[in-house]
Amino acid sequence: MKRRTVRVSEHSEAPPEVVYGLLADGTTWPAWSPIETFALERAGDPAPEGPGAIRVFVKGRTTGRDQLLELEPGRRLKYASLSGLPVRDYVGEVVLERSASGGTNIDWHSTFVPTTPPGTGPLAARGIRRFLAQCAHGLAVYAASQPAPRTGVGAGPFDPAPTMPSDPQRISSANP
Image 1: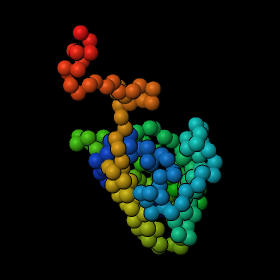
Image 2 (image 1 turned 90 degrees about the vertical axis):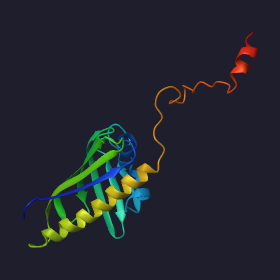
Image 3 (image 1 turned 45 degrees about the horizontal axis):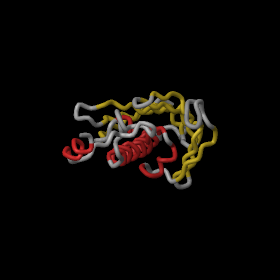
Image 4 (image 1 turned 90 degrees about the horizontal axis):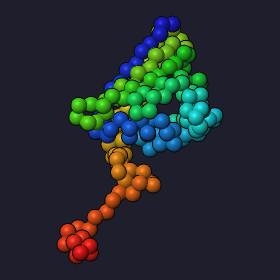
């Protein structure tokens, strides 16, 4: 059977850091994708969901096992399907690119070889395309509803934002 390629694209108003954070954290998938449950079968390096991690996703009667292959924080996640799909040699990749508008362009693509009876490759590709489109759309919308990460002064737990009284007169009278 011939290798198939599926590609879907979406745009999110969220910055790439927020989109990537959701994508890389399997526990969030049930909130924004058709996935119903998530479990971590094996931790990666670094733990928990670094390269080598095996994630188990359940949707209806289908249980899929994916292994994380490569991660570039804020930019890219690559994975392989180990089981659960009627395909072999499935590799998926999600590439995030900051858009000129400040949001994120999401490019989710996969390649695979169908294992279903001859002539049904287009059917397998259509099902995978529909699923990836639902995932990409859900990710884009959900990410846009999340707070943007804080940066700069006051961003970390040990770097509180400086506070100033709202009334400048209080400053001068407190320090004559």
